[in-house]
Length: 365
Ligand code: FNR
Image (cartoon, rainbow, N blue to C red; front, side):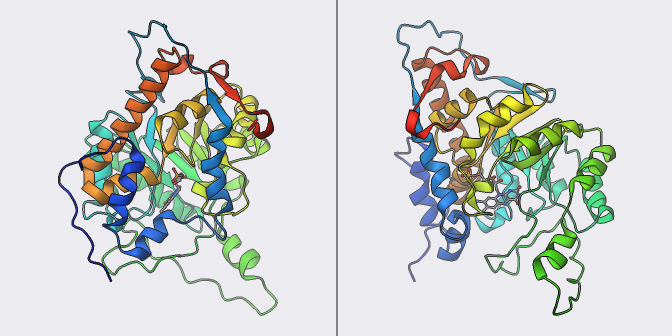
């Protein structure tokens, strides 16, 4: 087996875009961890679709525009962010760098953005927020029942997490990696043993799904907290409508980076109908497939209020820890600013559907 290269303490030479970090990360991670990070599910149909769909959106140059006062600032749930790039929740970040989630938290803060910490974090919620030096967002996975879920939620709130993102598209978490002994979801209680099923019962319906959340649990969850609550993993406008009707503050249009239901459509393809349905009654965030600042621009033009990025910041983490993550965020922001400048756009609010052209044969709307 090839020796893994050591982590870097500065950003590597010759990096021009987040994707340039990919090969640096790959050389620094054991192959099984690399596969776990990069894989989609089954045949990677949704993973590929997430990436390719961006090619069907074209950006229209608007030269000679005066963009001298341009900026990328947004306000989300009372917080001003210098740019609309939020680090998505990704589990077990000590797999990629010994500094784990704390490094991502520091990077997000240094770049005046946000980080959504996974329920499956490999460091304590308290340590991560202390590394950030600012309130962070917390991604909640359902913990088998209401009592256990509430316990985890209350711990996050006590630690200072300010926005809750409830992920609902991955009710069955099949482990695709054997975690090293030193890395585990340190914020979770040990799971209760799986219920014993009779041979007539289904492992899916009577086993896993018996412990999965349902709409009535979302209604219950909404009543438990006054903090902003978003639901992550929406692709159908009817579900988005229900989420808003239950009093949630927004949602994340996402197919989990193509990791759960292979065959699910490209996440971007379902952004416009959901934006239309929500029609300003809540915030709509988008993730799955963003690899550069032009992709961010396209998602914003299709109606997203902000975006989350997944794998690209982990490439930075695996290469150079907090500095690598901060650099990825900065590169994305630079690319977004450049795209705005070339399309004659001076604010995030000005990035609208009029600024793009959609290929007729691949219309994501
Ligand atoms: C994820 N994602 C995820 N989502 C979540 O809500 N909680 C989690 O713990 C995780 N863990 C996780 C691990 C790994 C290795 C990946 C790649 C993804 C999904 C994540 O938040 C996000 O939706 C996708 O990563 C976005 O797609 P891109 O940007 O990776 O294409």
